[in-house]
Amino acid sequence: MTAAIIGCGRMGREHAEAYVEMGVPISAVYDLDFYKAQAFAQEFGCEVSSDIVGRINADFVSICSWDDAHASQIIGAKGCRVIAEKPICIEPADLHRLASINGLTCNLPLRWVDTDPLKPYHVEAQYLWGRADQLTGWRAACPGYSFVLGGGVHVADLICRRGRPLFVSAHGQATHGFPAPTMIVATGQYDDGRTFGISINCANIGSHEFHLTEWLPRGRREQRGSGTDKRETIRKVVRGEKIDDPAGLAAHALCFAIEAALKNRRVEQVIYPTEA
Figure 1 (cartoon, one colour):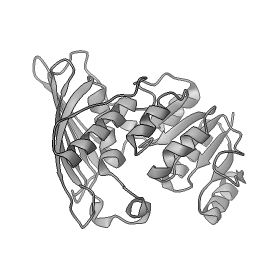
Figure 2 (figure 1 turned 180 degrees about the vertical axis):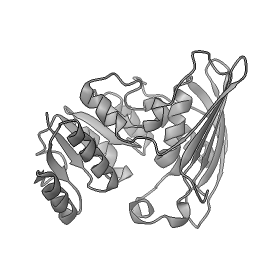
Figure 3 (figure 1 turned 45 degrees about the horizontal axis):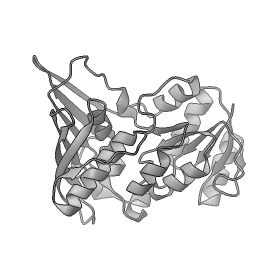
């Protein structure tokens, strides 16, 4: 078995090191910055691909590039087992196209947070990122960068693992001069009438963590965490283990509904691709 890496930044390195730890050698890498890819290839003893996917022959392909490139690169890697950094796409139409691809997994490490056998009647998930004031590099340059899809998708995934969201409303504000909302609050309803809330605070100056509170028929359950293991998804995929909601399709659908609610200032229905 071999793996290929598309995008030779920090997350590309996380993926590469995870494969090597699992005994899977890196066969090829690609990056828009050829010199970065060349240095990466020399370190991992592999070749630099001259195009994005066409000449990559590998069992696993990791997509660790800019958000706006993910969808086309995932489609280009069709036929391989693909592990994509979130979000898998930034346009709702692309989500429907990607839903039909077998072997696609989105790296959403918070999905390993425990669930309770009892259904919570209300769930609240808070995501604290706290780096909008220092936003530089590819996030600042990436067209249409979204803090909902770029960060909030983690807690959206937790919400979706506890039910199927039906409707959502949202409010947000931009801080630190960034054009997109950096502080977002969303509330919604599952298809069985239960409720949920999401808070995405990327204006927070400080820790990078999540808070999850589930109100159960008796009492409540609270979980907090930070520094989640970004390599666990790769390990599970290489071992051939089953991953629930492998592409995070529901979480992405919820994020698109939140984005629509922010834009249209109204309650929005969550539109799922057929396979979600």
